[in-house]
Length: 394
Image 1 (tube, rainbow, N blue to C red):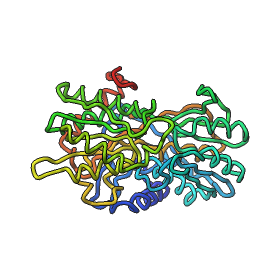
Image 2 (spheres, rainbow, N blue to C red):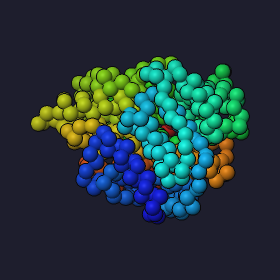
Image 3 (cartoon, rainbow, N blue to C red):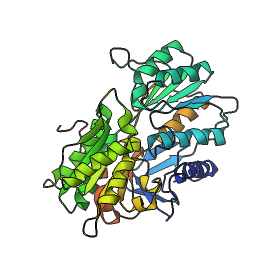
């Protein structure tokens, strides 16, 4: 992997962001795609800073460094979703890329986070546009209609939305010349998490917690359950638990509900639980720690960031088996760099295992004995030998 000052700078930024919630000690390792590994104090892979990414037949990724763009006098706004900074998950990853753009490229801008229920997402986008932001990152699928409305009102403002595309009032996807959709193949990484859960479970029972039941989070569930079944068809997969239903998005930032759901699943015999619930995942980690005994060690699987390095209590680290990495930081950085280089393109971009945008973490060393299995399945997905479903039961 290429290493230069810009990459090291972002590494430092991301380390500081996540270290605010965890000490990040131990020289941990992060693995992406088909087994390319990097070792660092914080176990977070570095952002590509706009360079071109290529993938070998073995699934190893390499990045060709692009010249650092000059962002002097350019403005980028950041609209976080529920949880904002400190969610230990996708908001923190977006924040790290944005912080790096300020520190390394010289951009300026404003950031806003919604209220607890997210009712003011559209207001935040409009405030950023009215403040003169040339480009705005809308970090979350729940911004889909908000981006359509505000993007229509401000056609000269560029928007980059995570996990969805703009939708009109009938929930129909609309192609817009000023909007980029930053999408991911979450089901692929979730499949690997299912494999890990099946191979590490001793009780023969595993579970899944989703923050809000939406098509996006159903992709996580579908991939996870498919991975479990592929690795061990005899494993029992408990019915998935969703913390809230649309339009209530608080399920992404309610550790109390996350803990209640985890306690219920552990009570039904699960010893490994995967979550796709944003900040609510903290409750899962706490439940795993509290319910473990001398005879039974309970596991949790994190999501988006390497959550082994971001949990606020070292005792919780011992229960984070692995994390599915979703490189929101890469997508946001790429969008900002393209904007600064006058190369911003609208429409869909998608990152999966082959592109290095999805992967898994090995921090703590708890899955060192099964990384060969995970890499083997990852390569089969990359090669098209395994087609991971995006809907449960498909």
